[in-house]
Image 1: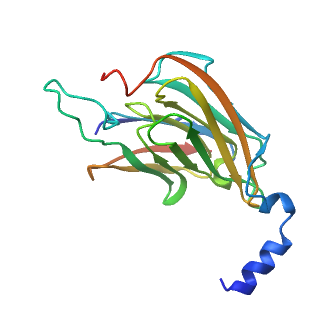
Image 2: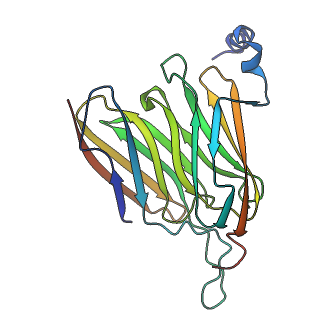
Image 3: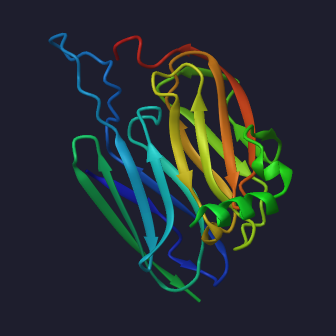
Length: 105
Length: 127
């Protein structure tokens, strides 16, 4: 699963930054039919978590009620330089991850 | 966590925190009034909160009136968020009222809802 993380490269300590995450995923509803008229199995990213230097700062439970190629933007306080790591898992059990580093002055 | 501790905590909480039904206010749910395509509708939810260790938003729930899965998403926040504001894109199976319910660290619940008219709904057209 391809994902893109959108965070500022640098931030001041204590500043609220916006973290954007875009994941390439169909978020299948389970109601769609394929070209042969068969139902496409429901498959959505169920849980997603973000850790900032190992501490969990955001978590989301999602459903097919979130559009395909889910985009989530959430805030976090820039505490220290380090890494933001994202992990998620879908209904098929497939896991994905992404990370991005930030410099805090 | 024993029973007596639980009863003690419940008695200490203000009435509002124990109320089962969410109150209107503090939450702002932004959705377009008219969406051409229900497959991807921009959504933004924000909650008025100092987001301190003592007083912050714990969860924000997005509830749909007509989607096959009523609970569209649950976002877990904490004091590390700084502000309570989340944007995403949702999928809507037809015109409906979408509700956002925020649960605060004191247990109180606040809500806001938005009416969306969807011209082409998701799920039904097989696309």
